[in-house]
View (cartoon, rainbow, N blue to C red):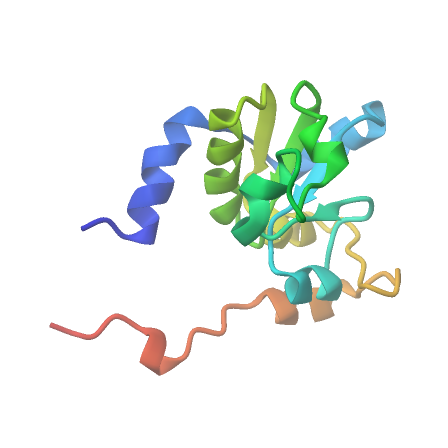
Length: 155
């Protein structure tokens, strides 16, 4: 049986990653990047990188293809464009980037360390109203909230 971390480890050799400081540099140099945030809408509304689009991982495949209710035309037509996939910590984005590569996307990269790393690098994050979120508030929002009942039982 494979666990979540095993799936990430299996995908990593296939997926290119970049660090937040590399993304900052790309954003300064390129305007044609697609920033694809694959977190859930509530996560995205709370904190996101300005200019990113939100497509939850649960509808990623249909959002990346034509003729579905979830189709995002910019994605479906962007198989040749550079796409940076973003999540909270850089795990879901690796799996999403791998899926997109398998669907024929040519230039997909995962943001290593995700939104957490972006915030740690002291880059701006915004909420659904377009207001910049304080770095310390973002730290609190991004902190792990694993409950005791979600922890692996002791053997």
